[in-house]
Amino acid sequence: MSLEWTPEAIKAEIDYRRGSMLANAEHVREVRRTTPRKASWWTRLVSRGAPKIPEQRKVQGSAA
Image (tube, rainbow, N blue to C red; front, side, top):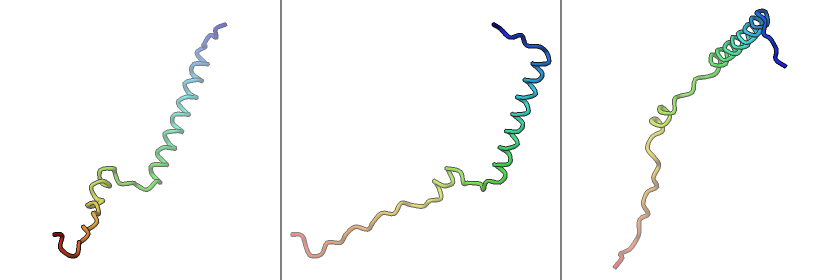
């Protein structure tokens, strides 16, 4: 059984999908507008500073 697509059915399907796409795009724009910007991975990597290396332990006395 195959369904025949009438011009009205095709137009309705296109309108439905276009409306859904536009609503989704509007939602994404709103989320991006209201979400605080996060620094890029490169900025976070570069600005984190040098690694913390513990000082060497000092040995008292002489090793003879």
